[in-house]
Length: 211
Image 1 (cartoon, one colour):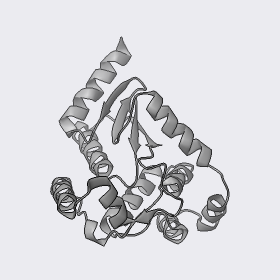
Image 2 (cartoon, rainbow, N blue to C red):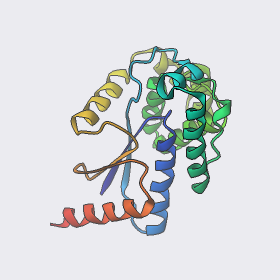
Image 3 (cartoon, rainbow, N blue to C red):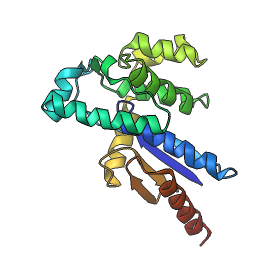
């Protein structure tokens, strides 16, 4: 059994979705499917250096009052899964390509999940610009990976095409938003679903696998 978790590191609902997936797996105890951390690009058109956060939010939501309503609601949901969102500290919306490359790099050492968690925390709790090479390198070092090797990786084009290919494949599957969960490559559900919903999806996928 495997679950593909499609996410973007700049999506707060994806952080919540990751927590709910973990909650579901913890409650089920012995059920330990393979989790594949698959990239999705919410803003593939962003410049490589990203844009200022206030410009991004104004373009997406319009008024500041609407921004505060939307993110205030997200922060409340975050607390229910022990995430202390700190949106006011975020000053920059990055292009997430290099952050996704970090996850793929970490996956070579079986640390993809650790990298995903570190990126979410860095961005949403600490307000760091996870599009900056220095920030990404610090994260790599903090999770026990070879920072020099990652630096070489980052300066190359390695992994970029893979990220775009994965994003295109998600759209071919009909996935247009994240988080999304793909159970055994054929059962898909999108949105930061309640852990009970995810548990029922897992049961359905396991039953279908037995047929």
